[in-house]
Amino acid sequence: MAEVLFYHLTESRMEDALPDLLERSLARGWRVVVQASSPERRDALDQHLWTYKDDSFLPHGSDAEGGGALQPILLTIEPEQRANDPHVRFMVDGAVPDDLGPYQRGVYLFDGHDPDQLATARERWKVEKAAGHTVTYWQQTEDRRWVKKA
Image 1 (cartoon, rainbow, N blue to C red):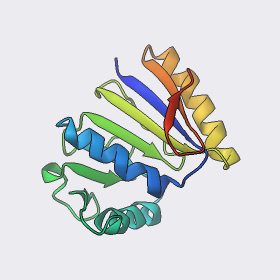
Image 2: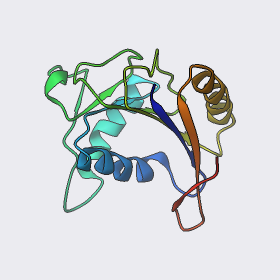
Image 3: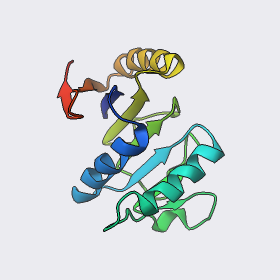
Image 4: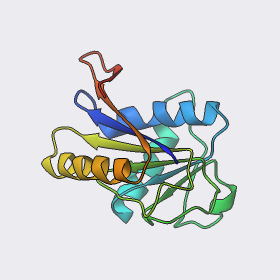
């Protein structure tokens, strides 16, 4: 069973929070897949991860480019994409995976100001808990730190 984390964005945008969480995953030696909700969103994330910081970047690629098996972070829209043999799967913008069973960790990152993303996160909480995964809920504080709420 996977550990499934729900990150409720209340103070920052997903583009601001995701790189830090990806850096932490890579620091643990994990390979990552990030599932976006549309090709346009995947491609925007692809560009953002190259330029989000002046002094660094996150090594990644998109499944639209091929070579996914070589990528430490693989961006996709496919719910079953596992070409890079990932340990962690991130779902952003309401994306929903096929099954989190093969992963050590699943991470739902959702915008607390978007009613559709909130509804999807609530539904996925029920689904992942019913599947037997360990689920935890994290919410941002005003200073953009994460606090475990459940």
